[in-house]
Length: 235
Image (tube, rainbow, N blue to C red; front, side, top):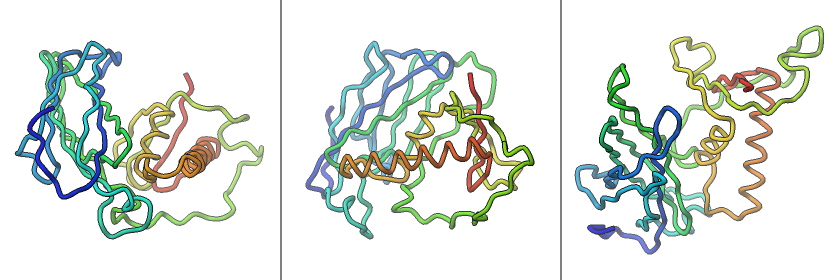
């Protein structure tokens, strides 16, 4: 990868992009991925191609010092990158806010839609700041004792790990908020990547991911809603 510009940092992180079809999740070889800093998207710092598996090489990129992600800090502990992905026969896609931390590899999935698909043009994807760094509204308060039905079963008669969850992207009272079908394992990955840092010790990562899984399964089983509405779908 050539043309990387210097950034005031002492460490490096890694990024790999996986490009698949939006329908069927088939690899897209020879896709072009253009990379820039999110703060300066007009200045390209590199361009790479995907291989037969739809993957780019693992790119080494500038990232802030490791200690910023290990202790609370007012400085942003990760660098943000923007990618533009194009491939013959597919709609281009722009993703900004990809977080790159030092000494770890970030994997960014990309799903491209065929030009033949009828519908509006693709919207640019903006990844929100990590909740440990960003400024977000407080969590919606919940009652300590939740109401249950007379049978003692709210949604399921037994705990089932779903294939998909449906995420209502907004307050439970907002009927206009979009809803997305997301694979359960991808949902867990997305939540984890937005709430913890991959640079943390292995035990800390495992503990937090288990807590996220437990919280999600509780919502699936009880169908009790917090900031995000979660339904279950089993295939």
